[in-house]
Image (cartoon, rainbow, N blue to C red; front, side, top):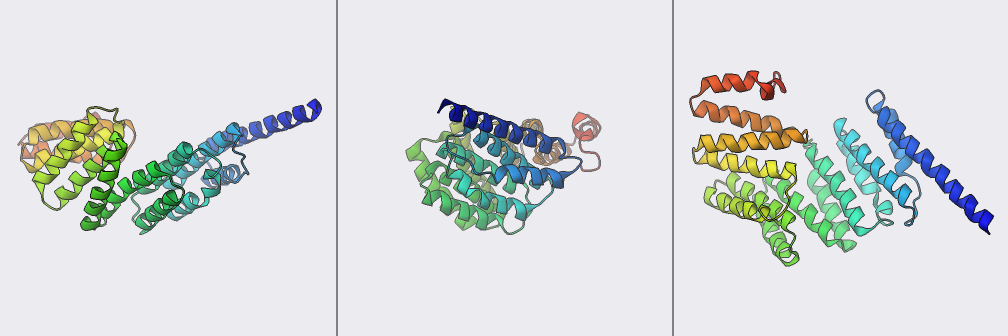
Length: 296
């Protein structure tokens, strides 16, 4: 009946409004009472959601994003890893594109913590296996691109290069240029660590060529500039290296990424190698240096 349909619609409206109020409340108490905020986020993300309820899906998506960031701020790596595993029932009721976005954002948040818990590679592999079982090709390759950097930071360079070669072939078939550029950049980092500067330079050139034809997000552009600066430093071209580190700092700083501090340190090192002590002092006492008092 019309009465029943109106009643259901009104009930959904009230429920959605309450959830949104809960979300706003959780966000407002994050600084004062992060544990209470986490409880509120948890209650929102634990809701039963129907695939046709776009409003509730959006609320859960926002709550997951906020919860992930808050757990990262509190350095709760295990809890964040468990959150990533626990959301799979929810991922089953959203579109593949949305599910991929949510998983990738949470995994990126987890890996950007740099907490070295030993959970990083197993979690990434587990998420890759899940993505493959769900036939989510784009998500699989996006996670494998992150896996390359994990193998690299873990010192497993053979596995890193094997993954590069496999993923590169798949990406060229799919024509996913941004992901291809990320893998080429990772390849450059691995070869640089192995001391093979010519191959590192060639991989970076490929990454920059790919980047020229697409929009590159600030964080990724900063990573490209950082690697360019490092390789110019290897060739003792500290003047050009400084320019790239400056661009990298601007990019990382614009998104509040902690690697901005590393870029600043490289800038200072370039000025030292160029024999410019006055410039070093100017950097330390200027706008950039003052952002990191006692850390440079």
